[in-house]
Every structure is written in C-alpha cells, then in structure tokens.
Length: 216
Image (cartoon, rainbow, N blue to C red):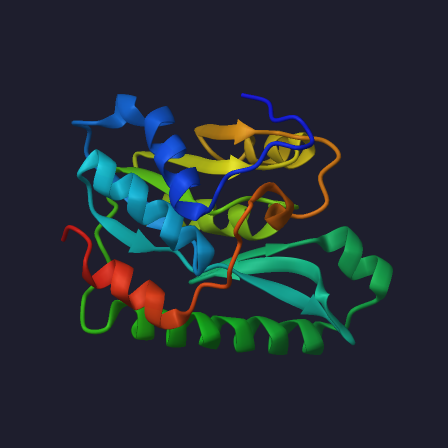
C-alpha cells in the first residue's frame, strides 16, 4: 500500500489495527510479537491482541557519535552489536570511546528490560515466529539490531512489520529479516512522525502497562 503525501495514520492504535490486518495469515501459528519501545509497543500490543499471541519487547539502542549523540555509529541489542564501520573510520572514532558507548547502551538496555518486564521472564523465542514491530522506521539501524537479537534467541523465522518506512531502509532490512511487511513507503520521507495525525510520546509506565496486560 502506498500513501500519498497527505495520507496519515490517525495514531499508533490505528496503525496497529491496519498492521494486524496485514499479518492475519499468521493467526494460529506459534508467534511472539516483539515491540520496540516505546512507541512500537503501542502498535505491537494491538497486533498481539488481534492475533491472540504473546507480547514482549526487544530493546535496541543507537550508538551515538562523539559530540553528536543523534548521529548513529550503529546500534546494539542485548549481546548484539551492529557497527557502521565506514562511518566509524570516517569520523576516526577511537576504540576506547566505542567500547564505552557500547557498554553504556548495553547497561541501559538491561535497566529498561528489568523495568518493563518487572518480574516476568522474557517470552521464549526458540522455534517460534518472531514478529518485530515498531511504529515506523527511518534509517533502520536499530531495527537491524532487533532482528539479529530475535534470530540469536533461536526464532525459526523473523519478520519485521512496521506501518511506514522509506523504500531505501526497507531494501536494507529485507537482507536481515525473512520477511518485511510495510504498509506504506511514502516519499519524500523525513521522519516517522510526519505520517501520523497524533504521535505523542509514549512513557515507560505505558510500556509496563501494555506488557503487564498482554497475554502471557
């Protein structure tokens, strides 16, 4: 489905409903839905509820460049590193800085995982279909880390499902996932939020609420 420049999702729930329709063929399969916090969890919860499958989180984090944390040197998930070696060489990033940034983001991942799941263990992925969901993709860096994390946890098949993404990012992600399902690939693409009528910040408390109320 292609959106024109003026088309939008009403909000993340609307995006989740439409995404669930595109994933309806997975009903009855052994599926785990993995939301990328924070906004992706709101979309993922709608999908998990529609399919009647468990919901969990996968928590990737961008590695910020020295003096410019918004510029990503790559991304990490728990025990997974995806580095942009070309950019690291171009910026002459020192190994000491890189290791420090990786360690800091891995620690933040552990903190968030404990906060989001509370006392619940992660949902097992071994031998199951993992559907990784975010509210949209811009560059795809953190999504790559999330997909590799799901595969490393033994998922038999890894699917990325997002409401909106630029075609360039989709091409990259198709090399990482067994399937990529995207509802819209509009151009020009500047930011995920431009394709939503309402794109409010999602709090950590909201993520905890959605996970605690999901099917075990």
